[in-house]
Structure formats: structure tokens, C-alpha cells
Length: 127
Image (cartoon, rainbow, N blue to C red):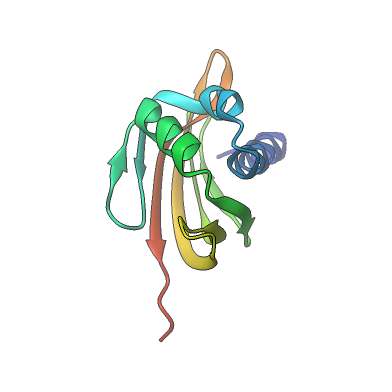
């Protein structure tokens, strides 16, 4: 079970991730992501850390990233964070699209602090 301060630290890390995506701050993302990161996009495309950072730098597509209520479970070494996400994305043509989904993220505690090791986004379709 995680203590309240650890949960607050993980939530702050997620906010930094969101800000870095919008700002295309590749250095910040490099520091937030574990070297063993597995990132599964909503399309099923899978990237490791270096591939994902290159992809974000090339696409430069995030206008805004919003998270709903997040649940965090785990222990001193690993944490799983789940919850809704709304991505505002700029397309190659310059239009803005909104993608709503549900995300599962896994974080590992390292000597340098908490790092994201896994990310899985599932798009939520209107029912």
C-alpha cells in the first residue's frame, strides 16, 4: 500500500509528463521515462523509450492533456495508476482532434525516484 505522500509524488510526476508532452520537452520526458519503458498507443503501435521520444519530437501533436480521477495502487517499488484521459491532438493537417480514453500506467521506484515503465491507452468510444 502506498502512503499519501507517495501518491502525491506520483500525481505530480503525471502532471510533469502532461506538461512535457504539450511543451515537447524531450529532456523532461527522458528523465520521466524508465529505460525499460513500453508505451502502447491507442492504435496498438508499441514504442520503447527512445522510439517514443523521437516520435513525440517528430509529431509535436499534443495541444492539451487532461486527466480525470486517478487511482493509484502499489507498494514501495511499483505502482499502477489508472484513470480517464482526454488528449487534444493537432493533426498533420493542423486540425485539432479530441481523443478520450482510459489509461493504465505502471511506475517503478528507482534510485532517481519514480519513473514510468509502462503506458497503455484504450480509446473510449461513445456507446
